[in-house]
Amino acid sequence: MRGLRRGSRGHTIAAAAAAAILATVMLVEVPPAALAADAATTSLPFIAKVGDPPGRNDFRSPSAVATDGMYLYVADTENSRIVKRRASNLAYVAQVGSAGNGPNQFNEPMGIATDGTYLYVADSQNNRIVKRKASNLAYVAQIGTEGRGANQFRYPTGVAVAGGYLYVADRDNNRIVKRKASNLAYVAQVGTAGSGTSQFKSPSGIAADGTFIYVADTDNNRIVKRRASNLAYVARYGTYGIGTDQLASPWGIAADGTSLYVADTDNNRIVKRRASTLANVASIGEAGSGNGQFSHPFGVAVKGSALFIADADNHRVVKRSASTLAFQSQVGTRSLTGTNQFCEPHGVAADDSSIYIADGCNARIVKRRLSDLSFVATAGSVDGSSGFELSYPEAVATDGRFVYVTDSNLHRITRFLASDLTPVDHTGVPGSGDGEFAGPSGIAIWEGSLYVADAFNHRVVKLAAADLSWQAATATGAGPAQLRYPRGIAADGTYVYVTEDGGRRIVRLRAIDLSYVDQILGFGGSDRFGEPAGVASDGKVLLVTDAGKGRIGAMRTDSLVVLGKVGTTGNGNDQFADPRGITWAPGPYVIVADTGNNRVVKRGF
Image (cartoon, rainbow, N blue to C red; front, top):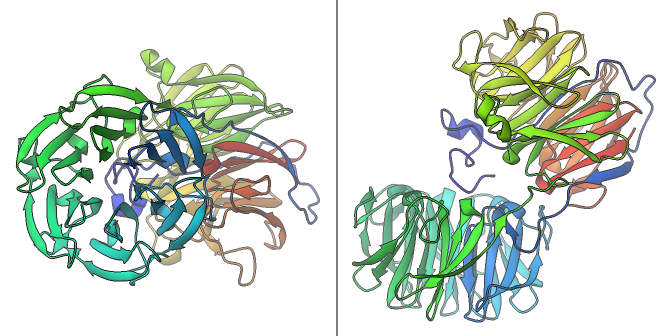
């Protein structure tokens, strides 16, 4: 995800270099025997899928809340949905949304506001503002594409409505945009990058009371008060720290005309201040999951006597007294942790009877039967006491005896027995030398050799599968031969295929010495890749997940003639949302890690 904790879940890898590894990658892997013998054209037909949706009382990093006093509206960010609940008792009412960019879809919405009749959603990754009816959550209108123009946004995260106007925190454009609430028409804007009185640095949250607007200027660690009428500067407070007048990455903010409520995100607290003078009134919170604790609270909303908090990393919404900040109630558990659920599955691999899934933010590896996708076993963070914990597994490969897992957060490769997922050993420490990794992502195996996409070292590493010993690595290269944040990888004995994070090409290397051969830019002619992510090859046919366009495809490895492709962005049987991992399985079948839909899909060939 890109919204929360930018720099670890945030920017693309290029922008977050040297930060914690991103949780958005893929897998590659190849079975030990060729499967697609004499390839002909194929429709890659749907066969089955597994991955139950989140429950009504489950959240995954909820980032914003809005209320009209009767109802509460939650931006359930990583579930890409909006949930409506009763404000009185937090009971479930309705929901809308799935991953995608259609009228009833979202891509990690980070902001929400309501005027009682309509909802306004900052659909952050889709770079748009969406207007919906509050009564039944029905779609009304939208505005926005990615860019810097008057009707464009770059990662909008905050939205507020008051007096017939809408105010948007256009985070990556470092500006505040004022629009008409009725038709979403542009009115005015203020802001450039910086720390001056008319500048912002990643403004993320915004509140309005009709006379003034209040901006959570996140990376400047301050709150800025401006006039709603002309966006003129009035006052500000805050520097970085934990003191009374200090903040640490404030994100959410709410106003009721008398008081301000600030989600002081990295200080894990809620701060109450006077709206008139910005003077301190009170605060509550420390790191944790108890009644007086928070884990990266991102959003706040207030109406009357009730204050609502989106406690993102506790995956819950908390209701407190607006006057005293005292705890009243809460709802929510972390979603997508069940046996038949996944949380950002990035990698898939298969042997003769089983598939193996890198279940990213569940920090586990899951084994399921190839025949019916039923559950067999799991391994992961529960093994931490023995030193074989997983933090963020991104890719898997198997030779039938062992399962090899890349863990981008722990910078290592871990080996498990394929039979029951018992941990065997691991290799790797952080660094750039031999035996060291920096965010290893994709992994592939072919005839005794492992190939690893070592993302932050911008290289591909070749290991001996038998003992995980070092064999070779790609040179830095120049021009087309230079790898930038390699993520997905496949090997077939002749070639190694590599994708790059955020890139639009597949780089082909010689398997024997990892030397550069050429690059593949699309599915033929003018049909360029959006963002190729996962790749798998059996020596004759190359499979590709095109995450940027929500599709998968197959092409011959010798001529690159396209044999078939399927998919658009969505959650239907022939749709995908940010598909990352792909692998061959005996049948032949094609197994896809449909990451944004939190499911694994089995298709024919």
